[in-house]
Length: 285
Image 1: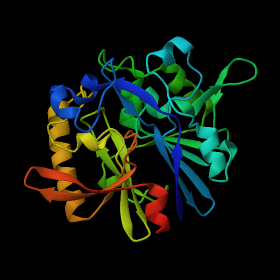
Image 2 (image 1 turned 90 degrees about the vertical axis):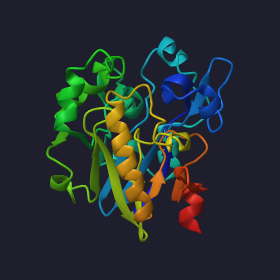
Image 3 (image 1 turned 120 degrees about the horizontal axis):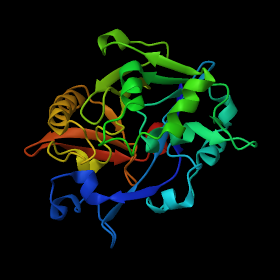
């Protein structure tokens, strides 16, 4: 097995929305904002090269939306999904599986593209797309709070293509899936968010997705305003971080523009970052 960090593109989001009820004077210590109160965000995917399978975890927001849409998110930097895949030695047609932690547009938008005829189609023509049945149903019938994050143009073409694979059951039932890694299920941010837990070079790497989007979200009360069940997120974070310290997990941060891979330690103030690494540097050292 070999893992590759895939940068799909950077954007900006409102810092208040990203930290909910936490005052700006506190969250800005780790996530400084611009004049419009926006903080820098990454859309960092993970590519798993395992035998004859090439599994991409999340796809970023893609490039098919309107300029007005992207204007809300102040895209910055020069990362693209295709360029990152090329740097890793691959093309999107090489991808055998696309694992979607959840179906919010910044995690799955890159899964669908317009073709030469102006119709929507999967951007990975040879891949199976993986979601959880409960989350899929949730996304197709969105609540008013999440409706703006579940875009039909990102979801329905996957179903229409016949390339969708829906997982069912609890974490215990999802152990050692056909994809070769365990899955942690989290329901605070959205119904059945799936976090891959990958064994690699003697370490356990957890793709933290939106349970812990940035290093600034490690304190238990620092919960996104986007979470549908914030009190449940508190419980899930506390349990997960306690386990992460005890079992020495590495956290792969999807949305932190500066910190890619972190270790954790228990401190008098709770679980905090012990060390931060560039992904490639850590596994080449």
